[in-house]
Amino acid sequence: MNRKYVDCREQLSESKCSLRISGLEDEVVRASIEHAVSVHREKDTPEFREEVRKSLKDEPQAQFEKKSSAA
Ligand SMILES: [Zn+2]
Image 1: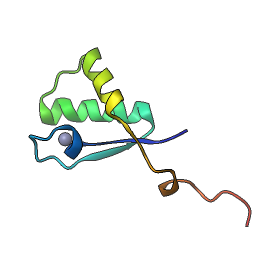
Image 2: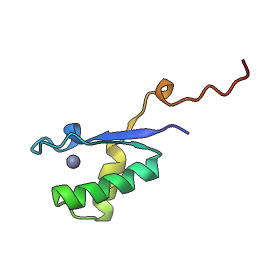
Image 3: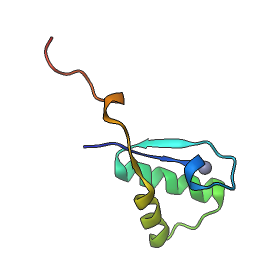
Image 4: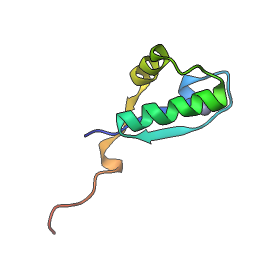
């Protein structure tokens, strides 16, 4: 499963927030909504969740892929 990330610098340009959240899609959506509500005074609505979900970007694969193949 691909990991996703959201970067506050790209989302909320009026803030000086530099937070970047990465993980599985559901984790990133949940964490970034909690962050947006507590820090950016957003409202936790289904519409906002959808907006957050759409704004997720794919994390480059190589950064987290474990070398599990036998040497
Ligand atoms: Zn932020």
